[in-house]
Length: 196
Image 1 (cartoon, rainbow, N blue to C red):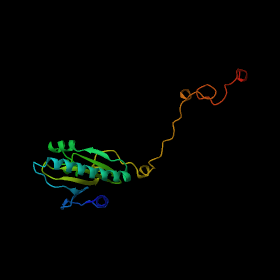
Image 2: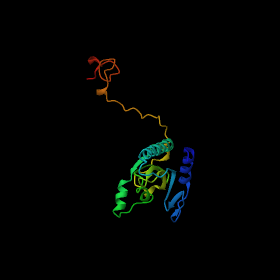
Image 3: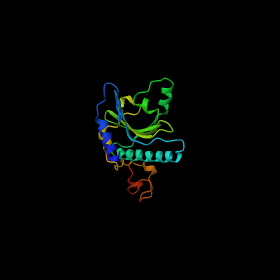
Image 4: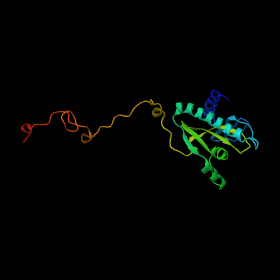
């Protein structure tokens, strides 16, 4: 799947309603509150494929990064989410919300955005040393995913090159003005003119 097709799939799954019951197809794993899809799948490896495995890991990492950069232009920088704590919680019998319950078994980290009511995330995973690398797309109800509240769209759409208003410098910290005193903008008051 090329980059344009991957972007189209992100948009499709972002808009696709969540099913009431789990549904699994070769292309999509869905359930109440989530969708999980492979945007790209590599090939299986044998024990002698160490060089090929490293090359494939680099290729999938670069593909994920390219897609992250395109989506960051739309939605800002993603929030990284380490999935190791969810894997540990799952192994200890704890509850993990979908799709994190499935992702944490083979994807170490995802990069996500909170857009409207949805959480959209990308990551690269591999289920085992001989299994293929996968570029994974997850969408979920944002309320099910731990993290900060989304930034309102009106704030997110502010121009990126806008600069904050300058903070006034206290007079004592300003360099001497033309009249030799810090922050002075006029000549010193003469004692003769000073009020009694």
